[in-house]
Image 1 (cartoon, rainbow, N blue to C red):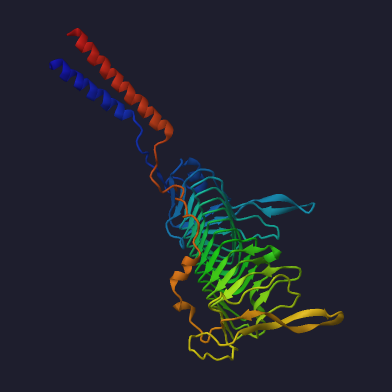
Image 2: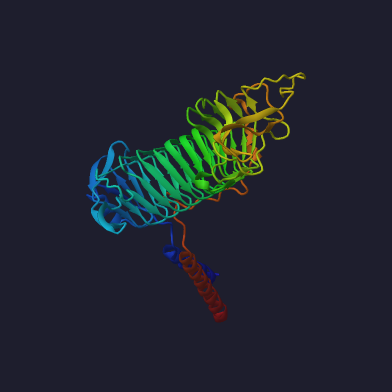
Length: 456
C-alpha cells in the first residue's frame, strides 16, 4: 500500500508540473498614452495582438498612424481626446500628370481592430484628388463613437464591420458583407455588399446601395439610390427622393415599405429599371411641382412592379414620366387592395373601404410623334389601373409590424468574428502540446505502476 500511495503522489506531482506548463488564457495589456509612450504610433508598434491602447484626454499630433495587428485604440472621451493628423504629401499620377496629394492619415490592414472614443482630424489640405483619411481593410473592424473632423472621409473594406454612433462631417463607403452601420451622422454613404444592416442613421445626402439581402431600416436621408440591388428590405425610412435602378442598373425583388417619401422635389420615387419590386404602405407626399412616382427612363424598362396600400397625397401628378414608357407595365393593386389617391372621386356603396369603380392611374409623358405625326409634347397617358382604390388614408405608423414578416431574410446573420475585446482562445498548437503532455504523464504513471508490480 505504501508503494501505491507513493506512486499516486508521484502522479500528482507529475500532473501538477504539467499543469504549470499548460497554456492558460493570456492577459491582454493596456498601454496608456502618454504615460507608457509619448506618441500613439510608438504605442501601436510596441503593442501585441489583442492589446488595448488607451489614450488619455488631450490633443495629440501624429503624422499618420498605421495599424497592422489586432488591437483596440480607445480614447478616454471622444470630445476631449483629439488626434490631429498632419499626413505627408505624396506624388500621385492623375491623367498623366504628377500631382501631390495627402497620404492616408489612419491606415488599418488587420482584422479585429477597434477604434473608439476619439476625435480624428486632418490637416486642412484638400486637393481635388485627395486620398482617403481613414482606409481600413480587414474583417471584424469596429469604429464606434468617434467624431470625424472636416475632410476625414472613410473607405472601409471587409466583412462583419461595425460602424456605430459616429459623427462624420464628410462621407463614407463600405465594401463587404454582414456589416452593421447604425446610429451614425454622415454626409453621404455608399454601401456595396450583402447581408448588411443599415439602421437609424442620419445621412445628410444620398445613400447609394449596391448589393442583396440588406436591411435598410429607420434611417433619414435626402436620397436613396439603388443600383444592381436585389431582395433588400427598405422600411421605416424618411427620404425625399428614391431612385430604383440608378445608372440604369436594374433592381429586382426589393420590398420598399412604410417609408415616408416627402417632397418637395421633382419626383418622389423614380422606378427606372427593374422588375418584381414591391412598394407598399409608403407615404408619397407633397410633390407639387413634379411626380409622386415616375416610371422607366430613356431606353430603360421598369415592369411588373407592384404598388399597393401607398398613400398618394398632394402631388401635382401622382404617376407620370417624361419619356417613352417601355415594358409590360406595372400593377397598382395586389388583387385585394390598391392605394389611396387623394383625387379619387368614386363612391363606396358597400362601405368596405374599397372604391366601387377603378382608379385610372393617369399622367403625362413626352411623346415625339403620334401615328407618324410629330407632336413633340406632353400627352395624356394611362399608366395602369388600380382596381381596388382605398377610400380613406391610413397613417403609416398604424400599420402592423407583421408587414415586415412578408419578406424574410433566407438565413440568419452569422455569428460575428471575435473582436479584440473577446477573451483569447487556446490555439490549436497550445491544445496539441497539452494533449502530448497529458499522454506523457499517463505513460509515466503506467510505467511506474508496472515496475512496482514486477518488483513485488
